[in-house]
Image (tube, rainbow, N blue to C red; front, top):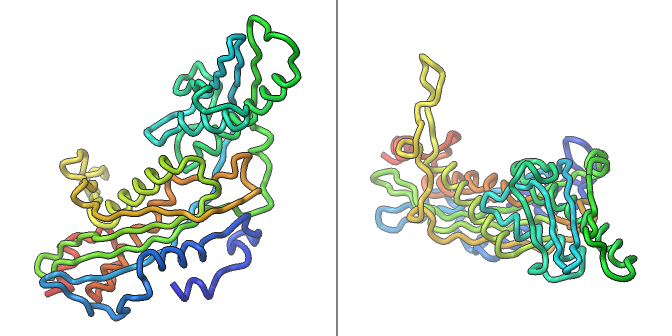
Length: 329
């Protein structure tokens, strides 16, 4: 961690652009304090509880801020109903909730007053849910449409026409512009693992993530996404592996009976936190994606923890018992 903090770059190494914001150092320091990182014995293979070898590890995480063109409409009916229409996709991440919040904020009303229609090709075109870009892409169009509607309602004198008022937004111009900043979300992952010295089994005892992801629009759904990402990282580190058939070139694992993903018993103490970050170079919401950032540093932190526990530096995932046992015998 100290090596990372002493080598913080002034600009993005690839592009040479300044960062719109860079909260990695703050994530590392906050996570270290929460995890008790500085109290550990740094020597490898120095801590044992019965047959269990105990280790801790840390890793940094980053994910680019991605955004795609989206369209949306905002409609006000004569009876006061407010409706947002956008072909967004809610895959369980709370898109409906956060889009209602974004629209409500722009309209100056409570989120409960906004109806959101998503998930149909009859709706205004919008990109897929992926690349941690959903909320940034859909939300930008929704915010633009809602802000336009709010302005038009403010200018309206007397009752609304029978058909109501509809504002349409398209973010093609905004999303096509090349930003003068390098825009990334950052995070720090800390893990404590226990390795069975007899069987080579690895258990994740504690997992903690601290993130710098712009403005967090909804704390409950954000924490759920961060936590879910870390669970996926556990799978990457310990269970998810698939061979290739040498004759046909296809994957040998074709179902969840042979491709193992983490279950509740694999996820003990998982905590997600974030730092307050005000980045004015993103989108009207000031948000960054939070889908993948929870995944990308988790496996590395677990791998470092296993190395600290056993002294063995393995460079291929997953860290299954058969790969660890030769180093424990």
